[in-house]
Image (tube, rainbow, N blue to C red; front, side):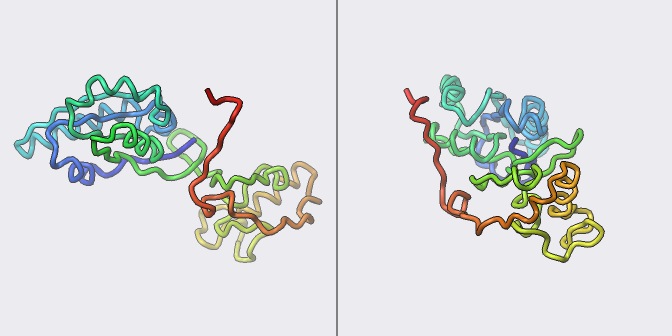
Length: 222
């Protein structure tokens, strides 16, 4: 899932300073799971914004809403019923959702209430870690299910850099060396011979380096 974190309230207050009425729009997708932009966070943030405005001697009318998703058009349409009554939308979705709302509600400035961070997992309650950089060319079958792009700090494809110590990355002693993890996993699986396979030079054109990406399924188009 996409992991995000809430922006500092001072930053949000500065963004909405010109408005006395806003929509605070949450999303029931990834940002709900990582406790950044779901219904609960919409309520907490809205209360905090109202209180902050009261201390400034100003009013702030907020329409609180949490959509099923902000990255699909059908879930955005119901917002049109009341959107014209509010001059701005503060979105708590990921960056994709924020941009999609902005595309569909072109008269409204759509402001980000969260910082989108990475594609990751919930290791435990309150702890999320990165697992994928969506490079578009998965090699997990060769690396024991551990991604060298996301888990190695240098995104190396054929073994560690030599800077790791005690199984930890040289950039941070709290970070596991991605290639140490790959080695240990392949050992568990009895597949250490896969380390002898030299992975070819990666074609980064399928990653973000190749520009904005698009996927079309003709069989699903209407």
